[in-house]
Amino acid sequence: MKVKNKKNAAVYIALIIMAFIMILPFVWSVLTSFKTQAEALRIPPQILPSSWSFKNYKAVSEVLPFATFFMNTFLMVVFRVLGSVFFSALAAYAFARLEFPFKNFLFVLVLLQMMVPGQIFILPQYMIVSKLGWLDSIKALVLPGIVSTFGTFLLRQFFMGIPRDLEEASVLDGCSIWKTFWKVMLPLTKSGLVSVAIFTALFAWKDMMWPLIVNMSIDKMTLSSGLVNLMGQYSVDYPQLMAGSLIAIVPMVILFLLFQKQFVEGIATSGTKG
Image 1: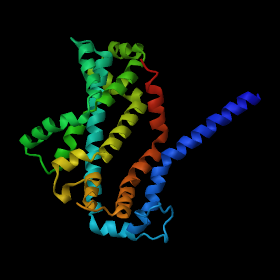
Image 2: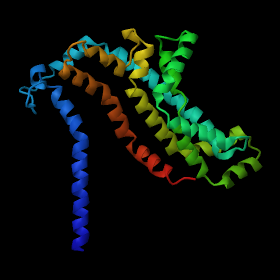
Image 3: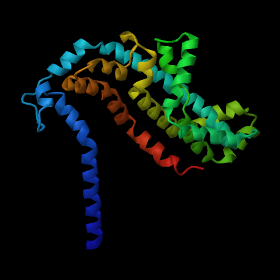
Image 4: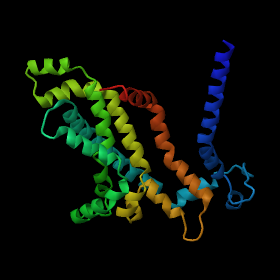
């Protein structure tokens, strides 16, 4: 019993140390957002600010149109989530349940796309958006994110874990493929759909490179690309940058806290399907 207690204590200590290491950058960002520029650059580092003031939050709110950034980001996230969940569910159901030529080969191609850095697709995506005349618009932000390779893979695992008896029963009752998918199979993958939605929202919210490339007008920028305006050519006001970053992540923190159960459940069960 003593050996077991010692092992448990060692595990807890290791977890506490790792948790501290992971949360330290966030805590440091919060502390920096209350400092002055001189305190943020001081060597050796000054841990606590001399005075706790919200002047950096006020200053960054006056410099950047956060209301516009939030609206653009919200629209991008909503449309990306809807498109990603819908198209990923369709593709996943086809790969998991339907039979068609070269199915396994095509699914391998989907998996290979997950192994390729996303930066490779920026140039062709930019050319497509440019040809469509969508540069500097909300549509340009939405287009690359409406299909999710990861979402297709994740939902395929859920569909493969559903007993075929349910599908066969619906076919015997006269349901078409579409009705079977929409009325029978899709509701059974609720936790998977929520997981895909959360992941898509998270990736879209923090996406900086693509919005920065396609939208140059400040009234068309998102939160992540808009914060770049706080970085000067020769200097960076780190306290204001940290304040702006913390303002930008608040909605994602709230989203995770609201859907934490579904998020953990979706990831935990996806590895046991199929």
